Length: 45
Image 1 (cartoon, helix red, strand yellow):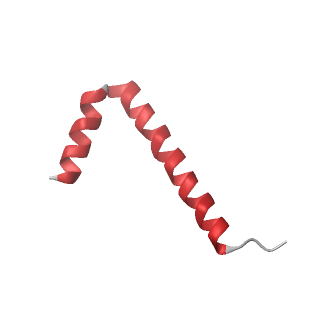
Image 2: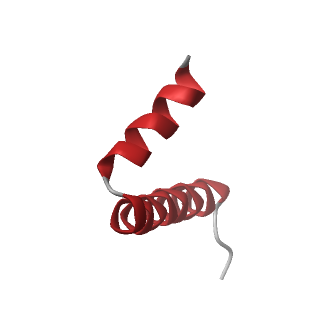
């Protein structure tokens, strides 16, 4: 049972997307949408 590196990369990418989505929902629930907007603006500017 060898797992190809493409499948491993796909699972890793999917895991990162799920983790980022979960973190964004937690931040949204704690501080509201303004916090996420400010966070994105701080990283982009």
